[in-house]
Image (cartoon, rainbow over all chains, first blue to last red; front, top):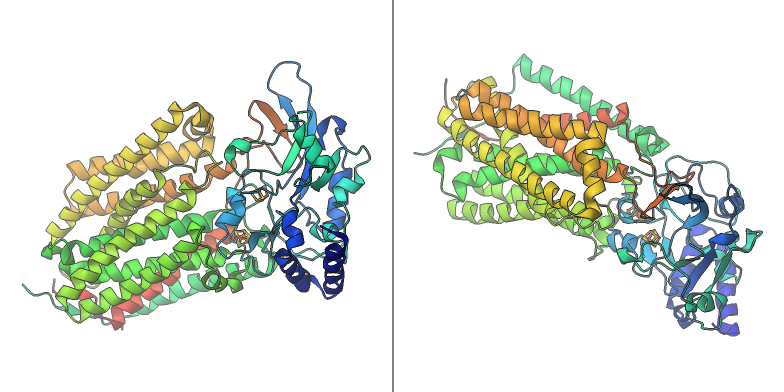
Length: 232
Length: 387
Ligand code: SF4
Ligand code: SF4
């Protein structure tokens, strides 16, 4: 994305976000039309060796940024442990993989789940009918249902979801569109996460992926995840 | 021999009392849906691990019953078995009602039911669910035309529409099975056998329900029901039970033989406590083997109705087994690892049906009941005949 298109989109986003969640979504759809977006393919590389067990920084930052409802998680720190004696446990953050071939988008009967041209998978929460089919098919358990209306709004700039729709990580799309990093990436004190454009060979993420050491979770399922892990 | 059809009187006290009871149940069901709609789904037993619960079970159950009774209705019109003509109208009507019930249950379960119309505006050709929206609504339409043709005694048209209806019923049911079968990544869902075994279960439960309702309706309205007709249906029922068992055997043997799905199948069949119970006791023993044996050795209307009820119950267990265990079992994100997280990754989910969901399901059933008896009153569905 060159500087000028970036500014244009940025200005559009800023102008429309001021009007509330619906226009913001429209702005995403408009951004979808611009060429600039298609050039990008956002991805993430997480070095789990830098993760600390019991740490909640990324989860807290996410919750605060995105008004995630209680009990739901857009990112969660899981612990994995090989099923062998005396194995060491390893913390690992799990979030929506922003799959390139997303099952959730395929099954959504009203196309409320959709993939933007830059590869981010979004949910139009004004269209979602709450059928939860997407939750059934997402192999990564990345989606949560808003079971209860919640009053507590931590970030007034972020959309507020009503109960009865599905929510999930959107790579902090409104931050990306402003040129910022996702909240979890920015918050991690150990810089365990890198975020960037997989299509740009000079980006940090592309370089890390090019080393061949970055793995994805269950790529055999065929959804082409775009979140990579180092040190697994 | 020509069959004449008549309406029921619908003026007795019994009729109004029944209507009243059903009305109360329906109101209770709608009220619990209203609570879920305004307060949120936390009132149900569903959670992020098991987002599909009783309403989805009821939906696919009713769709199955509907497809089954539609196929039965076509025995006379399409397959030329004129002795079954007496109940063809009521079977088509029942098929349409059950599908309405299924859609109602599905619609009331949505997080945002007020947006249901969006499903017709934004079709997603890649989503089997989206296709089903089209299949379901056209199915109801076909039933209506089918009934109309029957009322007008247009035999050729009846035959044509009847054939279409049977194909549609199988399509609708396969499509519903596809919602589960096409789900890769869930061991207990992903199977090409799901659509055909859905059809088999539809036929057995549909036949069971039709038998029960026929005997009841004819008895209550004091009409003569030819026992041969019920005996014929009961022979069909045996065949359908055996087909269901056959599909279950093939599906589970295939799964347990393959290392990839061994654990999941083992869970369902042997270690998943309540799910094993529902599978072996509910579905296999009470719902299939016992009625099959009874149907083989006892040839009386009473026993046939009893075993039909068992089959109808067994298929409800089957629907439960299809929907719930596949979700309860966590998806294997890290094969060979133990996984834990605050979001219950790697842990068994649980689903405890909440009273509200049950009231809602009973309410939907009551609505079908109301429409059924009102239908008998206003349309000539039942063959004339004295007792
Ligand atoms: S991880 Fe799940 S929710 Fe995220 S894009 Fe992939 S299939 Fe969709
Ligand atoms: S719950 Fe919403 S986003 Fe998910 S498939 Fe249904 S309509 Fe689409």
